[in-house]
Length: 172
Image (cartoon, rainbow, N blue to C red):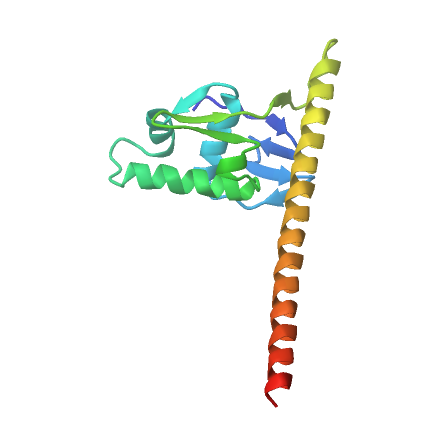
């Protein structure tokens, strides 16, 4: 993989620091094993294009490595999705392209350490800010959905307990 040192890849609320080999969310480091880190870097550097399973295989394993590549790729993608709080069916970052590979769908801003701000980067910054807001809205929506499910389950349980108590009172 041709990743250059000293670059930071920014997308949503995340930063992928290629020099420190770290993923950060809002400045906090997220633990990521070496293979999922390399996979995330490969996908983020190729944002918008399909990265084939063969490209992933070549980037994650040497030619003399004997493993079940499909299972390994699936596991690495799963770990990256978990690190990004991403879901395959409602993806904000990694889109599965059936039978071909994966596409990084979030806009990525590549920042070189110490690079001056170029004219015309306002649109990119605005795009990044909008994407971060979309991510926050989706996460808030998912949180509301989980609370709603919990409340519904609690109401069902309470109703069942009340009905059971009323039936027991009638019997005695």
